[in-house]
Image (cartoon, helix red, strand yellow):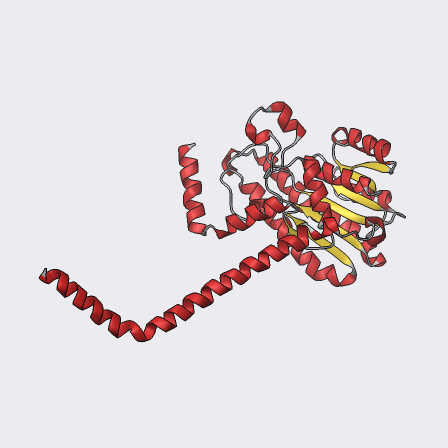
Length: 322
C-alpha cells in the first residue's frame, strides 16, 4: 500500500512540475495534426484535378493542341501499343520506330483500318551508328510531329544483375537509356520550331522504391523519370510539354494467354493496357509527372509512406523466403 501511495505521490509531483509544458505539447500536436490534414487535403485535390476533372471537362482536340503525327518508340510493349492506339482514336497518325517490324506490323495495319489514320513503320537499327538517325529524319520530314512516346522495355521475370547475360544487359541499357534519349534529340527540334509538342516517357513505378530482382528496370526507370523532369525544365517554356508516366502493374493479353494466375487478370490495381492508356492520355497537358491511373496514384502514395528501412527489410525477407 505504501508503494502505491508513493507512486501516486510521485506521479502528482511529476505532473505538477510538467504542467507548464502541457499546453505547449498540445499546441505542437495540434499543429502537426493540422499539417498532415492539409497535406492529405492537398493530395486529394491533386488526385481530382489530375485524374477526374480532365475526363469530365471537354478540352481542345489533341491534334489542335500538339500536332497531327506521333512517333512511338518501344511499341512492342503492350502499354506503348495501347497508348498509340489511343492516340489513333483521337485522329493522330502514328510513326512506329522499331528494330523488328513483326512486333508492330499488325498493330499499324489495325490502326489504319479501324481509325482511318496513316501509319508508318520505320526499321531502325541503332547499333549501326548514324544510319538509324537518317532513316528517322527522312520519315518525319515535312510532318507535323506533335507527340513522341518513349517506352522503357520491361522485364519478363525478376532477374538479378549477375544472372543477366552481358550482351542482354548492354542491349537493355541501350534501348532504355541511349535510344530513348536519341529519339528525343531527333524529334525535339521540329517541336521547338513549331513551339508545340508533347514528349511522353513511359517508365515504371519502380522509381518509387527499389525492387528485388529488377535492378536494371529500376535504374532505367529512374533515368527516364529524371530525364523527363530535366527536359521539361529546359523546354517547358518553349511550348513543349514533357510528361513522365510511372505506371505500376499493367496486365496484357499475352500474359493472360500464357498464365492463368490471378496476377495476370485485369483488376482495379492492375488494369488492361487499353484502360490504362485511356486514363493516362487524359492527364496529358495537366501534369508533368504522374502514374497516369488513379488507383496507381493511391498505390504510389501508400508506398511513399513506408519508411525506406522498413521497405529494405521487407525486401530482404521476401528474397530470403523465395
